[in-house]
Length: 426
Image (tube, rainbow, N blue to C red):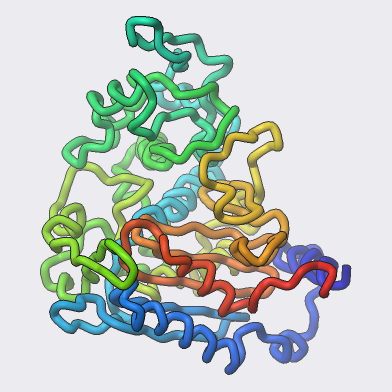
């Protein structure tokens, strides 16, 4: 009970509703001490030594001080290029929270409300039809949507956009429309998505998909400027995130980490750079909101620290505290029981482009975390989280496919917070 009270009070502190403890007391109770740093070193280095990753780096801040940094192994194993602090990695879906922040700057300006119909701003999504299986001839059956797709739906992945290759009939339409093509603009992408029936009724399931790409399109539509320019002007430039970008110029490509595919225990094969880096070494028309950015540890840590500072970092105010709170609040009602693979992240709900931890782990097998933390990860096994209770921000960089099949994220978090303890033992 005492621990639960401390969690609750600390969350209130983060959002300004509880009197903060004296600074000295908080400093004396740091999570990341010498023992934890040694534990993180041992954990990360073991993954390199086992041959299951080529290289890894991690950066942690606690109570506004750098608490941990180290890098192990190689950004490019074959060419003996060490993983280090300046290594550039492809962050894939860790692009999504940046897009969400860009979108919410327009929310603060009163440009939309979360429960507004998406079609109000984007007629491409008017009169959506919903998949209802296939008939005896294999033709898909459609029904009308019970309600319009809302902006809240695209921020929490409940819009119904299909994202699988195994839905009879519907996946074929998705493939034919090809809304993920790099060769199209966000406007054309939205048109194509709007031409594909929804997989389920809006608001009834959680299913990862192109919702955040649609957020980028919506920013572009509302703001009247290209999304790439908007996110640069309103998020990246104010935070001085100069190395977070879609296109990596040739002069910086020597710092761009190679990607590896794990084919078995201790077995890695390098994905050719021209294939792995294709999107980032060519300037394509598509500027997706859901993937595509590259970054460095320090750049992404700046973004995370802005969030733990309730929308402000240095001289830049990106969002209001109440907007960050809104983003870090679970928006999934209990009625949304179908949640795809989201439960593998632990006892989490989903806010605005973040998973949000709503309960402590119930077993040693679950990924640990503090109630109130919000986080996301990327396809190449990258990870970041914001822990407002302990004022911790963490970024983990690696370039490994398929996504974290080795338990890296769990073991890293166990190294930071300690292994699971049941409520009865506290």
